[in-house]
Picture 1: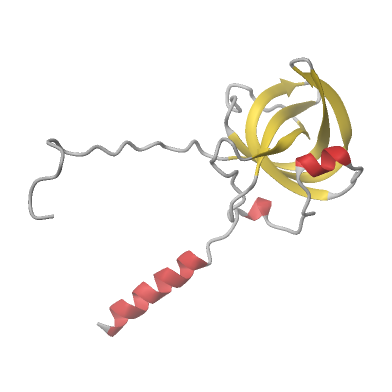
Picture 2: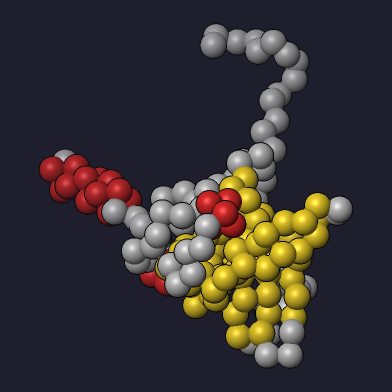
Length: 159
């Protein structure tokens, strides 16, 4: 009985120690893309994430246009669709396949701010903060689960 309780306590403690994936760990500026678009914080280390809007493969790098969302305690973009913190562009050397990095996939980047770029979103001119990314962390797709209730409704029985 005692060993069972100790094993359960150990599992609970290890679960409480779960943290961010190793590539995403570190100290970063408490700066959102919306804040960075209005200031010059070039060189600041950032860890930003969100959903992909567009992937642009170039001759020597790939750039990602992102809608930023806040990150959870693991560093994964928060799931709420209306919780946006502005947009940003992250570029990384090498080729990242747009078939894998699809629109709306969740990605977290670490890197340094490298300036700004103005682009149009529809007819609106938007100032995007640019991130020179060190890490491009593609999160696995979230599986949606469907909860079904047995018929007939309301519940019958003793509950």
